Image (tube, rainbow, N blue to C red):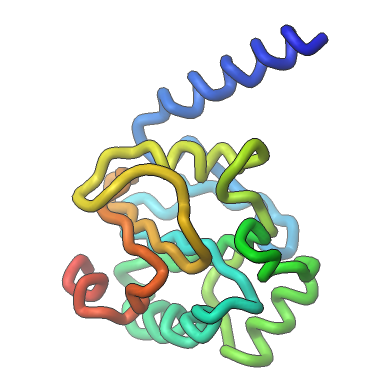
Length: 173
């Protein structure tokens, strides 16, 4: 049984890495509705792993500002994850309520996923292995940002300390 599971995992990993762009992926939004990345073709996408009890949580405000001001050029998507210091313990309902109440979040939020480790979501497995202008490898903390270009390729990654409305990110738009 263990061998079969290992083989299945290996096949899924090979299939995941074979993806040439993000458009083959989909995810569940915070309301459990399926969202395909295909619908964002021609736009840049900023993917951020988020957490409600982190020192960087206030970045929700700037993510919302980015969405409001540049929403015609970029799609902002938050992916709540409880991988770092158990800083996202809430349910999807609790996360959505927190984000709306405290930061007025209207940008797209995904259902909670794992962004590292043995239970890493296939999207993040793919994202963290894509060559880009900055760096590859695992997510190190909450609020790391991954910029996808208009063709569905990873263009650049930003560590947690880079603010969503930083010159570095705005200049990429």
